[in-house]
Image (cartoon, rainbow, N blue to C red):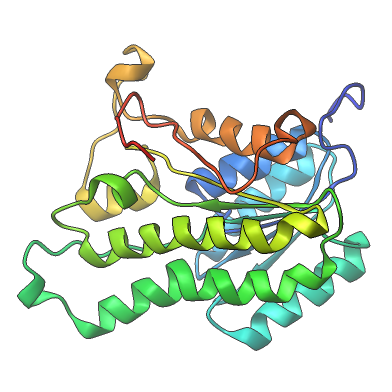
Length: 253
């Protein structure tokens, strides 16, 4: 159980995509520790989703989960309606779901993979945000997960990098539209992070976390704190911006 004193997100309602593992799960657990009730979306990883759901529940917060594709408008509408019915509203939207398929030659890029990456990473993000937006109110916020590759590029992730660049532009544009409504829209652009997705994609071995923070891949917990900052009143003057927990990469963005 969590201590109810001095919680930064007490009784806030949070909807998070891709929270069955990796950065999304770390954010969900951190927000739950800070008093938030969590609704999260996963794709097909029901076993991981159930584990995440149990861990959030053990923190004494309400939690519901949904398996499906954010590229499906009807699914987004179902998720939002059930979340609002269960929690009474939505205060914070975390758009974190994403996928990537490496390819070192553009001539070999499969159209199927390109469309899957765009559908998951940016089109689904826009569709879900469109559905959630009417339920947000003054003081609400949206936080999107982009990446350092939006600024630096990546020789094996052309389509993925393109979607992450689109997320930066989407964040900045929506922040302008949302400003008169008192809704803040920001993004987080991690550098290399030790997650199940990167391990699956590149077969990376887990790094020694005893190394100094700036000499290794970030842990998901280290990245999650940037999301917490953007979700609280500590960042009341920040909108249309991107935080860069990337270990010191210079991105000029």
